[in-house]
Image 1 (cartoon, rainbow, N blue to C red):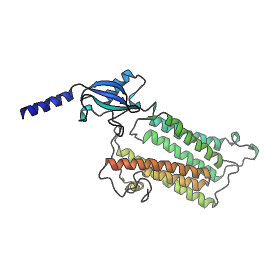
Image 2: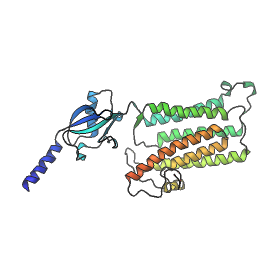
Image 3: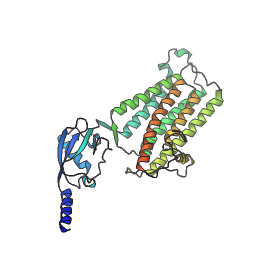
Image 4: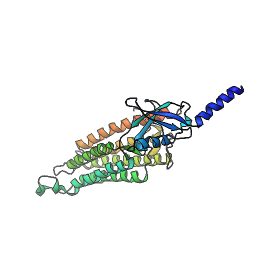
Length: 322
C-alpha cells in the first residue's frame, strides 16, 4: 500500500514538473515544434513558446486541439487540467490566418450601407441618366431611407455599446466578404428604391404603413434580445448560460427559439420588403434569412451539447418549425 501511494505521488509530481509536448500540424501530421511545459502552464504559455520560433504568429491566429475532431483549446486552460497530458503528448496546430477584431468588421460592414444608401438618396444627379426629369422623392422613398439608415445606425451603436463577443477576432478575409455582401446589397437596393421611375407599392399607403409596422416591431424585438444577450454574459467574461426571457415582453420569444435576435431581424426585413415592394429587398431578406438560419442551427446545436437541461421543445429560429 505504501509503495502504491509512493508510485502515485511520484506520478503526480512528474505532472507538476516539466514535460515535453509535441506540436503537430493538423494539415499534414508533421511535428512542428517540441516545447517544455509544466502542469501549471496554460495553452497561452504554449503559444508564446511557439511564437518564439514563428514570430509572424500571434495567439488569436493560433488554434490548438487535442484531436482534429475536438474543439479548439481555450488560452486559459492549464496543461495539468488534462490527465492525458504526459511527457511526449501531442497537440494539433492550425494557423487560422491573419485576424481582425469582430468589432472592427461589424463597424465596417454596418457603416458602409448607411453612406452607400444615402449616396443614391441625396445625390441622384450623380447616379441616374436623365437629371432633368428626376421627380421629388415620394413619402415611401423617404420612409424607406429612414428605415434602412435607422437599422444600420442601430447596428453600429449596438456594436459599440451592447455586443459582447465570445471571440475577439475572425479571419481578415471575412472583412472583405462581409463588406461585399452588405455594401453590394445596399447599393443595389438603394438604386432601385430611389430611382426616378420607382413606383408606389400596389396597395398604396396601407401597404406602406403595414410594412412600417412590421419593420418597427422587428427592430424593437431585435434590440430587446440583443440587450438580453448582453446581460446574460458579464463584461470581460466568456460565460454562457441558457438564454431566458427577462421582463421585456419581446424576450418571451426565447421560450420558443434559441436565436430570437435572428427571428426578429428577418421580421424587420420582411417589413421593409412589404414597405418598398422591390425585388432586391425581397432577395436580401431571403439570402440573409438563409444565412441567419444556418447560424441559428449551429448555435442551437452548441447550446444542446453544452447544457444537458436545455429546453427540448425550443427550436433554433422559427417557432415550432426550425
